[in-house]
Length: 156
Image (cartoon, rainbow, N blue to C red):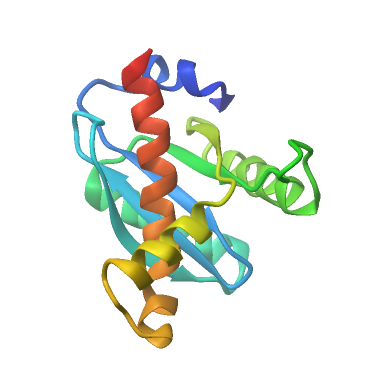
């Protein structure tokens, strides 16, 4: 398929199928998934980055087990709204996914401050140690990103 505007994503997907959310880090990919009604996002798994093709196949396998048919990728836009190298990397990741699966529907969601918000939540509300937060933050950030996108879609 293609990289779509977020508002077009639901029309490109079969009804009652989950959407995956991704937080692309330098060493890991946080993965979250929605429910079939696309209302609630839940953290799913952390993929430790090795080689793109292996990472993509691990992602596709996770999506298959959950029945996810589309992806929302967090786009790390700078605070002033410009796109830097991390945004280019996220866009390249999406293009490369589409080369492996041309029928995939992908959209981006502005993820500014998502990791900071998740870290704050894990410190303040869950009172987790730094080591435990490190294990959870990327999955939780993926859920935070996906939830923001779902909330926007459900407000349309």
